[in-house]
Length: 450
Image (cartoon, rainbow, N blue to C red; front, side, top):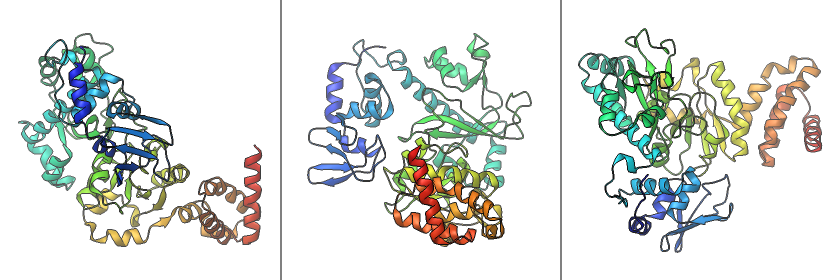
């Protein structure tokens, strides 16, 4: 990779808005000359992250890290120095100069090439969605009639169509100067390990509706795609309802929160994030007027997913599907969310509907009423693990049920929340409140002794 000129680096360092850059990672508020926010590097409840726009420097008191705009991007995104320069340059529309002259593909970082390829492919598939001569009309009708989304929503989210005939994609990328290694590392193609000639590789997503997955800065880093009736029969993933990009240098499933780039900017300060199960659920909620809608990549919500949220708000509504899988996922994420200090509420729709189904026939007018019926974290925990009928079980069975909630209650921290949960569990299990609190204290003593 060619070296970025020193003059370019110095000029970009002066021109980069450190407050705006920090705001990509955490919500910033001005106090005198400085701006403060929650740490972008760890969970906390009180702001310890300071930015000075006059010096262009930042410091995180909770992690004892500091530096300039490049150092912020390096530490937050795990990039090396040249990559962080390119990242900041892209963020502020700054054209870099390289010591060998020009700014061709060979002079960009490998990561930068992967990002460019994803953007080019996104644009190509968007055009195919609108103009494909064979299936364009069919895919638009599928989107508007079967999925009941507007074309404006498709444009807003960059919805695309990967054509059945994928013969133009790879030649087009090669013609733009991208090498075989870069194409292979995007994860967009089958056959890269077995077939030396890239012109014989096949697109992973052909014949599918494609949804771009973006990072928190809004850059396309992966795709998820819905299998359709027109998906080729010889496609190796034909039986899967959805096909996703594999993990790459850009895309880590356990860290990526779908629509967080948009939700963090469009929701009002007092509004919660609304965690739904799938990308189409999030798109549906957003288009219905719920701007805080986000989704994990499936039901496996991780600590890394939830760690990103408190930088913007502590409030989270968990709005997963009402089926057994959705409720199990909600229970799994509960202790994680409590550890991260989130104020979590749980919302389920009647009749087992998912958010996509519900908001395809409703708008946001009824949302406030739904939220009013959301259960607190402890109500959800107790009602899920110690159902109302538990009072009729033998005492030993009731005590066993209580053992399942104690580790979760322990994560709540706040004494009043713990008390609420224990009292609710005592009522459900038909056990005296005093006995319940004593059982909980025994559990805590045993936990601390281990």
